Length: 264
Ligand code: ARG
Image 1 (cartoon, rainbow, N blue to C red):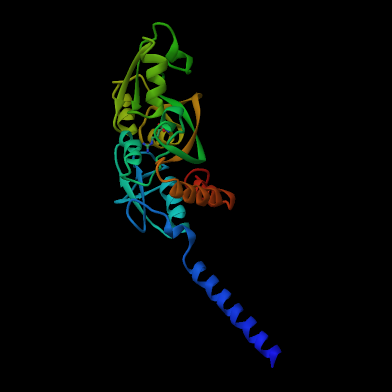
Image 2 (cartoon, helix red, strand yellow):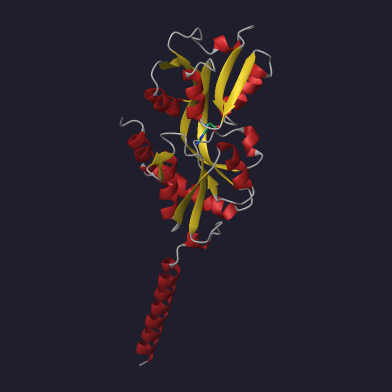
């Protein structure tokens, strides 16, 4: 009888442990993370940047949208995308209006003062778009003494920042800032600017739409893209970053990039 008593105790203990396990696994660890809107991952972007983010009908699609969607579903959250000026994204993140900024955004030291960047998930190159037959044939032509070119950029992108520092502030030329990259490209087509400095993938997409333009072979700068997050919610930062790292490790991110870039 003593033996059976022990056995019953053991079985009861086992049942208790198993049911406790079942309880805690039913609720994923991440679903407890706090987001701007409970149950949702709110992402800020500027959907004027194919193939990273652009409109397909009234839906925002692209590499960033899909990676964010995969992160959200790993965390048991619903993705909500807010479209805004590129210029406003860091502020929206910093002031806690959104959970993450994903916009083909380059990691820079200046931005790191305002936000924390996730693991990088892609690289970008600042390239130069010119009209066929332009006298600008390499990056160096922009820095030449007396060159005095007018350079079109999307406001507050790294293309804007580099050209402002390297060229405008040095008195070597002027920078014309547009709210959309596509508008800068239209200005180039219309002869209002001499070239456009912008990220390589959107450059390809824009040039494909406008006749008589080309991308120079030379590169202005090489950069890393990452998500921008608030410094004030480290729990969410870790959850998102761990999810992103897992999606990079298991090939999901590469698959998404291939779908929009390499497969073409
Ligand atoms: N990579 C550049 C930057 O971080 C340009 C990004 C523009 N992105 C956009 N969605 N419009 O400044």
